[in-house]
Image (cartoon, rainbow, N blue to C red):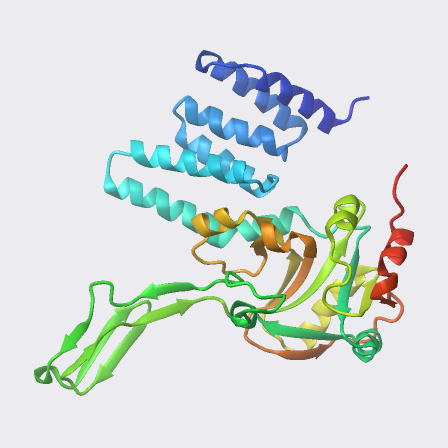
Length: 354
């Protein structure tokens, strides 16, 4: 009996061979059949989004476009398609209000829903291991014996220029100009004054003052603890791209990561830490991050060009706390491996398939 994914791929290839706008509906019917067998087939989702766009159904096109971005291999092609569809729909809308609503709708999806959908649909595989590199053996022992996790502010990574982990887009906050029309002058006759500037911000004083500029940053306040994730699915890519000597001389290899994740979650609740989320990082083209994500509210998006080789899995606390958090011994589910032996040990856990 044929695998559903194989059937979906055959149907997609059949649809892909159909050319010409006069056959658009026939092509959409075949693509719909492909998605019945594999609802997450990224190429079929992209083609369906474009097909509905071609036949003049923008709502259906945008719906499938969002699905394609969630489930797609995150190439420049997918984001170029997104830019083209959104721009052309925007040009066809009849009123400024309709155009603005489209922009707000896409921004809301990308800034608020996209990361959550990625975390939900692509959890850590059941056969995975997590790897944490440290500089000293004593740090590795503390992690094994006491479950010590180091959390660092995302702001640190945005500002640590010249260091390995530097990333100006890390959990990038939104910067709002509170004086978009230029400097604000308040005369002495207005004293005392209290001016609302928007976004809940205000300013008070005695008058006869000029405020040259005022900005507000929203977001960017997470702290994170980072691991690398290896599983059967990414095994070949991991062994090809992972930077074995980077980040430390010792590795803590967690063989049963789902037990570890639950242990961390329970410890955070007991210690009354702020909201904890965890998951795999999604790697996107740098151009897509710049064009589509003016802010990255949840710290699970990174540039594929610079950071794909890290294969990151993260724990994130919704605050700016920095320092060690202890979650209890993990000695039964983890081991210490010198970095020089790490490739051999992981090869034993994930042998190459013949």
